[in-house]
Image (cartoon, rainbow, N blue to C red; front, side, top):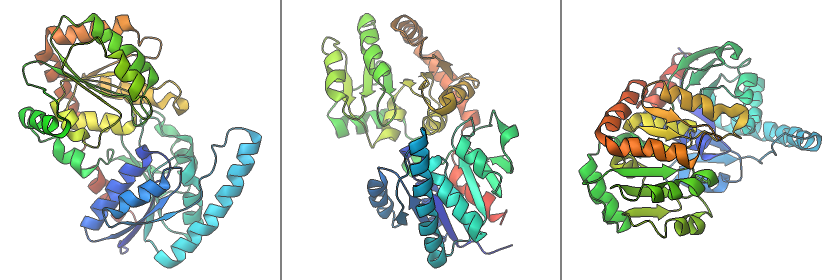
Amino acid sequence: MKAFEKLAIACGGTGGHFYPGLSVAVEFKKLGGTPLLILSGRHSEEQKLKALEHNIESEIVPSPPVPTGILEKLDYSRTCAINIVKILKVFSTFRPDAILVMGSYTSIAAGIASTVSKIPMFIHEGNALAGKANLFLSRFAAKMALSFPAVNARKILCGYEITGMPARAEIVDGRLQGKGDAIAMVNAAYGTGFSDKSPIILVFGGSQGAMKINDLVPPTFDMLKKKEFQIIHLAGHDKIKETKARYANIDKPRLVIESSDKMSMLYAVSDLVISRSGGSTIAELCLFGKYAILAPYPYASDNHQRENADYYASSGAGTVLTDTEFTITKISGLIASFLDNPAEYVEKGRLSAKIAVPDAAARIISLIRNSI
């Protein structure tokens, strides 16, 4: 078996690609290996600093545009060529034993560079529908690690294995928190007055927020204000002012903030979740065993969030509302049913534990070690 001491991880783009890649890097370092992140995208400088908090080095390459129109495709090809050359230089000094690409169009250059360098390439797919970039790279890859069973597995041109979605250590560890302790921690962190006397509903739309969720969930709560419940709503970047305004007449214990770096505590205190269905969100819901009302983002590439949501709901732990179904009438009916019997929904949420993979990062590293 070939030595496996150095691992390059291409995880540019959104947090949905970066944080799972960082989680693998942290685990690999813990096991005695040397990881190097290859970053690309508008958040790469912030991501580099985040990696340094874990003493993990990274290299930044230019961010290519989304290859949509003819001009964008030409610009993408030009930037991709520049990135291939730069990544080849990185490989010549770092000399990785393997490379793991975390998906998205930003990873194509790293995948091509690894093929040119004859460095074994592995792919991680974060959604139930394998993306176009990963499918393209699969013809050159040794193996693909899947977060969930792939609905288009027949299009994958290399071997594959379900390893799960790598989650941050604080998320994995946080699932062991008791609700009472987590409520005390949230109250201490945010100055709130939550109690365990009534259910807590967690609402969020991803790091950027979701306008439809922000627009429709508060008035739904207003319709149900005679019932007893508490609210945590993460509005997303630049959406806090208008979201707070929608709660002005709702006299319930609540926390309405832009975002949080304490998601493990928020999951731990919640009894019901209303959210989008990105790959990381689905994996985290599995870890915490929460019943979820899932509203897939309708403009995600190839509608992959719908496939993620359907997979989660198939465990019995969630309900999927498409964009047209996500109405005040539908949402209020589901929340009212939950509030009439929250214990039943808490039990249903625990059904997702059967598809949870808390050791996903370790499984990916094992897959690579056993395949090079």
